[in-house]
Length: 286
Image 1 (cartoon, helix red, strand yellow):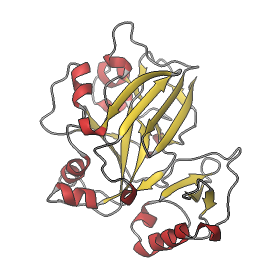
Image 2 (cartoon, rainbow, N blue to C red; image 1 turned 135 degrees about the horizontal axis):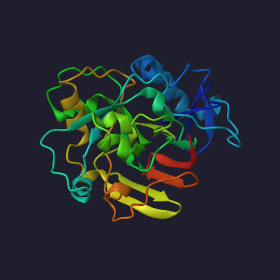
Image 3 (cartoon, helix red, strand yellow; image 1 turned 180 degrees about the vertical axis):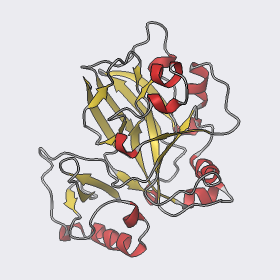
Image 4 (cartoon, rainbow, N blue to C red; image 1 turned 90 degrees about the horizontal axis):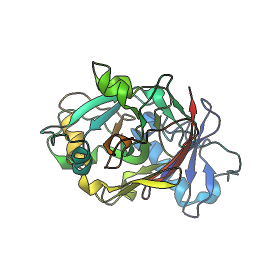
């Protein structure tokens, strides 16, 4: 299923994109797309039954209708740094022996076509297309990558916007350059795991002002999805509705020759993970 949330920011309602591409209202079936829904087998069954007979769901006119983040009430966002061989190579970093972790606050999440704000004083705002993993079952001390995959509810396209000066040159942790407002556009859809045959075979692409900058595949991940979930479950409990951003392939501004083409107000970024939908953001000053 392709689940999404539509409407003004803070007042989104649940929806479904049916097999014919018609947007359908789910608000009569479930109150929201969130961790509670993903953990509730009976509620998911109601949604799947409705998806199989979409005519029972009111159609929505998408014209002028904002698409919000496809997941509400996100618990935490765990991010994996340097998780692609080609990205590590372009930045001159050693291949990590274990996953590198940092966090993004849930309030960085915006819709896939919402404005992204370049922070005040920023000189190095960068782009990163990523595969986002959404947890559907509580995960603690998992024993295998297969168990890790079994705890995934679905996948989405994510944009891990980053400010490199804040991240690398201002001391402390990476979080300074990762948690600026609007720095995690998510969506348009939450695609349930049953529709993603192999999360390690997904092309990812990103364009800036129409120019292709990133063109990678999740096959290049150092730590694949199942291993990432298993690994994280030994350091923290993962709950339904938690999100994992799984890293970015080569092609970021930081990895390019001087003068590095960092983002500025007026730029347009478009990105996609194949099968998970496309994003478009115009950048403005904060």
